[in-house]
Image 1 (cartoon, rainbow, N blue to C red):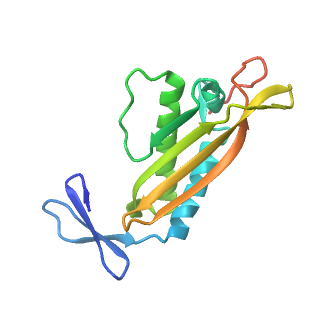
Image 2: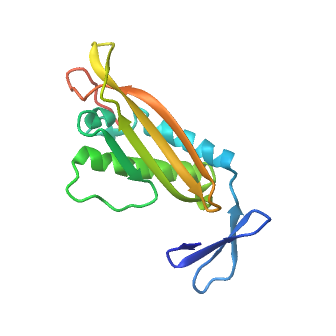
Length: 173
């Protein structure tokens, strides 16, 4: 498998080797199991949907509800989308950064070949406290493919009310 101008090989011993131009065969680490990758995906969803995912010092997802019905993010590709609104661009940037952070923290970065996040906003909502505002269920599904071709996915559903600064507190993060 090629990564830029590097090639990745693995052997039956489940060890990952990288060859870069001018560099000898180098051991990078153990091949992560699907269970380890799934743990990284769970950690990512927890950190991404937390209150610390902010845009303009407010919870990011309140800005997304009402703007899109679904959003697909390539978590391994840093390319920006031209003419995208600032909240959607922030959602992509935060997702990529938090995903890479969780891959490294969980020790599976070298084992993931591709990954996508799908954010789906339900058209129906429900009234939620504390201000009895209409919130919509939002499903976050992350899918990753290992360099061996094993596909692992995780998802979570949270209630998200549209951004309203009258009821929200600004974050320090």
